[in-house]
Image 1 (cartoon, rainbow, N blue to C red):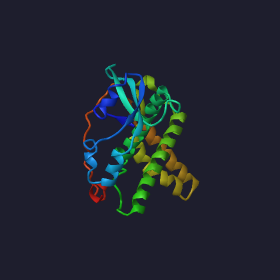
Image 2: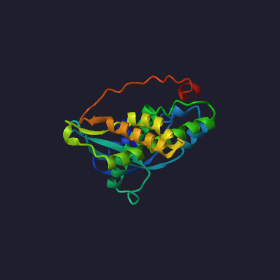
Image 3: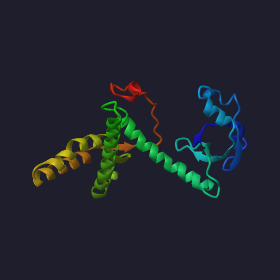
Image 4: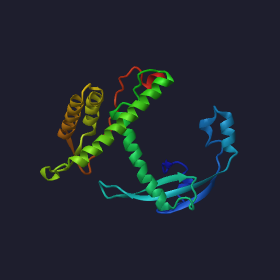
Length: 224
């Protein structure tokens, strides 16, 4: 688990960059004040000693070259995972966050078509299924049609946003059409459109985060 330097800093500040250390953690009444409405949990929290390992991993910002420490909190022992092993896990974790960013912000995962549990699970399943389908098809397209990078100033890649919309439109046609020729035509149209839309990979580009407006009346923000 990633944590901020300010949280439990009395422990994390004792750890040197590039090293890890295990502490026996206890919580007092002040530290558990946030849970005062849940008395059983607060009581258990104050009467339990937790063995936690603090890890400081030095990382380098690609944009500026600045070196900083990422503080991780884990209950994995050094025998289970070395510091380098945790560093690799943290790197892989970003791949998961990248996928969730696409699901949430580009595919609007959180805008549900209903409020019943079954409908919400159905929406989540369909969204993840479409994402997997899109990524698999993009992998096949990239293997079959290499991008001529020498024609462009920046390195180029397929436009995921547009690819999602294209596959939404043409994939069902390519499966449900009555004849083989019609199905092949839909698939060829889908591939042609995906090949046309490229976006540059601009190094060291930073964009200010914008808070998107969720227009769905069925969004979890209004129903839960």
